[in-house]
Image 1 (cartoon, rainbow, N blue to C red):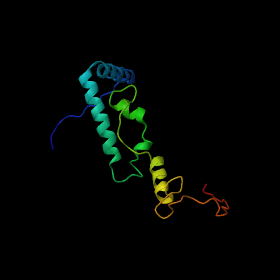
Image 2 (image 1 turned 120 degrees about the horizontal axis):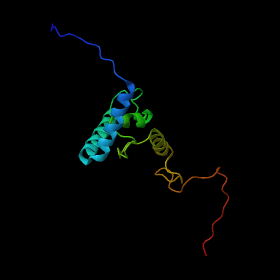
Image 3 (image 1 turned 180 degrees about the horizontal axis):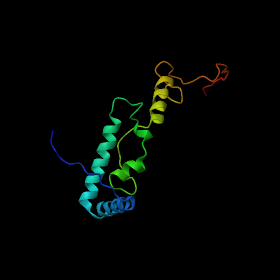
Image 4 (image 1 turned 135 degrees about the vertical axis):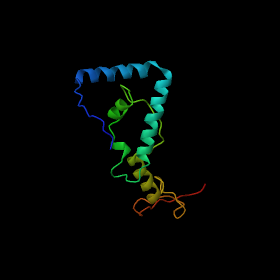
Length: 125
């Protein structure tokens, strides 16, 4: 074991807040830092979304403001992740089960019958 003396360092919280705002300004003002931070932010969200334990690592439940702050952004940057929301996945699954909204399908080529009491008569002139 290394014999390194451990010293406790007491820091002032106001100094830490000052550093955070300085880092945000630096990232905001430098194109390359901003680009790198945005790429890191995007990678973090994608890796979070790709985790197999979706009930714990659900990207839709993340506090994006807090995540963005950890990458020195004052506001979350707009990022296109091509993620489906859970609501849209549910709607897509329901459409596949029900068929399309108008009722046309391979098994029902004429569409949905409303109640089955259709007494309309069609005449060709």
